[in-house]
Amino acid sequence: MRLHLVLKSKDDIVLPIHYNKCLQDMIYYYIDDKKFYYQLKTNGFNYNNKSLKLFTFSKIMGQYQIDKINNNIKFTKTIKLIISSPVKYFIESVAKGILKNHKNILLDNNNLFLSDMEFEVREQFNTTHIIEMMTPLVTYKTKEKKTIFISPFDADFEKYINNNIKIKMNILNNNNEDYNIKITPQFLQSEKFMKIQMFGDIIIKGWIGRYEISSTPDTIQIAYYSGLGSKNSMGFGMFRIIDTKE
Image (cartoon, rainbow, N blue to C red; front, top):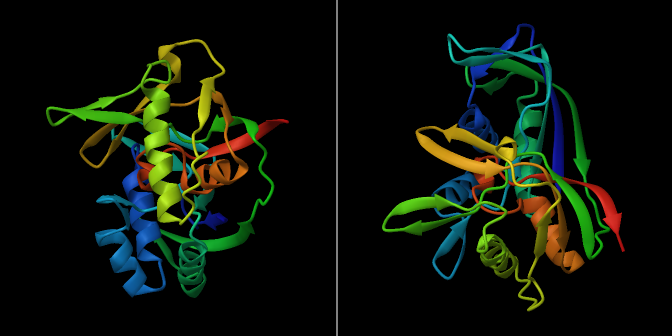
């Protein structure tokens, strides 16, 4: 399920240029079920000692100006945001918390109010889709305590995508052996598709662009709602479907 929000403010909305942490904090804060919130934030959902939060979110959509001197980004008074998760209860709890506080929603130091809210439930997924990343796709491995981010053109890229989706499917009690995703970039290798963002003090490298993905419809559905690749709950891996191949 996806939750589409339109938020407004009487003033311009000023955030750090790298604002993903601010969005994550807002999402956690408005989870209405505080017991669920505590469990999610501290432990997440677990499988074989791997913990995932099973949600992701888009970048902020709206008109903006970047102030490099003060290292911030200023949005005009209306912004849009999408929050996504395969866990229906999570989306419902966030929506309930926002509705309860619809006249005063805090995003960092900004006071917003809810203008519109819509739920998206897409039920039809095919075996092959062309997708476009709405937020960077992140895949990585660790070696000697060092994080190595993996390019879509790296031989290990698909392997780590599939390691991640296997965990998600098992958490959601869908251990179909045909979970593997075949993913192919629809662009030539270029640095312009590589994006470096900060999440707090963490440097994260990901890739945007269009990809062809093929798998079972159930697998693609889980990737659509939870995010593709890693670091989803930090605001990475959200995509939209732009074309369908039978």
